[in-house]
Image (cartoon, rainbow, N blue to C red; front, side):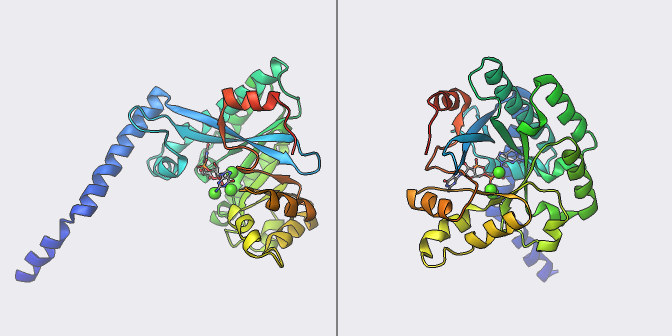
Length: 281
Ligand code: C2E
Ligand code: CA
Ligand code: CA
Ligand code: CA
């Protein structure tokens, strides 16, 4: 009985209690955020290294919390996945991003070839009507399916081989290009990678950052670019922050780059201003 008393005493951990309360608060706020549509899409340009021009935008979700500063996805995407709100949020991002591109294109503000890249959580792959949503959004916004790109993290393909492959092949049939995000962080084998219909590999920013510390051989980035090309895919480098990194990536024949050097993710009003200046790097 004595030892039980002692064990009980340890059950109440004020730190854990505090964390549990915060998590409940977050869940509560997230449910309201979905109802009240408190999310925003920010856009970050992706640059073609051959022309130096913007060829695509990546949609990155933000949460305009009523009483806090802008909340970043790291703080609410995992929780949304846990409590089953990710599908609703992510489909909204997809719709909003496609509508934005479509309205700019209708007003003839942008080149018709500008594409939009949207991140999809693996949870959406288990939702039976994902493809129906995508078809509806493409039809409603009249964007060309090849201008909508889907980004999926490398870890996703390890999760459930057959199911994931099945959904990916639907995208392929719809002519929606697929980008493997965070390439290099997921430990997938190359033969595995080869059996998925990806069009591009996005080299994780941790490898791009290490190019500088490793002037002599530039770390793993050259190998990753070679892998992409030898498998008939293009290579995108993310997290490009310095002119040196840009020059190195150009030397290595990397196809595309993205990062603070070009622009931070911006709300759509600022992104269209940037696009209208036709920047070139
Ligand atoms: P990600 O897809 O790997 O996105 C790249 C992240 O790097 C973004 O963070 C972006 O703001 C940041 N970034 C861009 N350029 C630079 C740079 O030069 N240096 C550094 N250090 N960072 C840079 P963000 O916007 O906070 O998004 C974090 C992650 O949240 C994303 O990682 C993505 O996995 C997820 N996410 C964002 N939006 C969505 C969404 O709509 N749906 C889903 N499922 N996930 C999303
Ligand atoms: Ca991404
Ligand atoms: Ca990434
Ligand atoms: Ca990431």
